[in-house]
Amino acid sequence: MNVLEQKNNIKVLISAEEIQAKVEEIADKLNKKYKDSEELTLICVLSGSVMFFTDLARCLKMPVKLEFIKVSSYEKSSTTGEIKEVLFNLPDFSGKDVVIVEDIVDTGITAKYLTERINNDFHPKTFCFVSLFDKKCTRKIDIEPDIYGFDIDDKFIVGYGLDYDGYYRNLPYTGYIE
Ligand code: IMP
Ligand code: MG
Image (cartoon, rainbow, N blue to C red; front, side, top):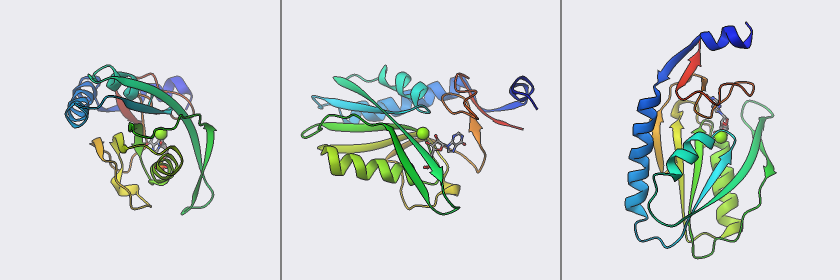
C-alpha cells in the first residue's frame, strides 16, 4: 500500500473537535495548578508533541517560557530501550516550575528517562509530566503521567503530531491505519 492509499485507510479514532476540547481541559488543570507561578517552562518533546504543545501553550494564562528537546528511542530487544538525545539544550531550572509535554506514553521508557534526566540535571522546583495520549496496556516501566488526555488501546495511532514513517503528523485528528 502506498502513502496515498494508506491515508485513505486511516480510521478516525478521536476527532479534531474532541482533541481541542481535551487540550482546553488539560490547560484548565494547568491554569489552576500554576495560577500563582511566576515562571513556568513548558518543554516540547519533538517531534510528536508539536501540535499538542502549541495548542496547549496558547491556552495558558501565567507567564510561560517555551523550550524544545528532541529524543529518539530505539528498542534493542523487546524489554529494553535506549534513548538518544538529538537536541537537549536546556537552562538550569532552579526555583522554576517545569511542565514537560509529550504526545504519548507507551512503554514508559522515554517518560522515565526524561523525568530522571530533567530532575537530576536541571533542578526544577516542581516538575509535571503531561501527555495527550496514554497507552497503559503497553507499559513496560512503572510510570504514569501526572496529567493525560486519552486512554489508548494497543493500537498504533497517527495524526495530531504522531507519525508513521514520518507521515501524518499534520492531520488535525488522530486515527489508526486499518
Ligand atoms: P515510549 O515507548 O513510552 O518510550 O514511547 C516512545 C515514543 O514512541 C513516543 O513518544 C512516541 O513518539 C512513539 N509512539 C509510541 N506509540 C505510538 C503510536 O501509537 N503512534 C505513534 N508514535 C508512537
Ligand atoms: Mg514522543
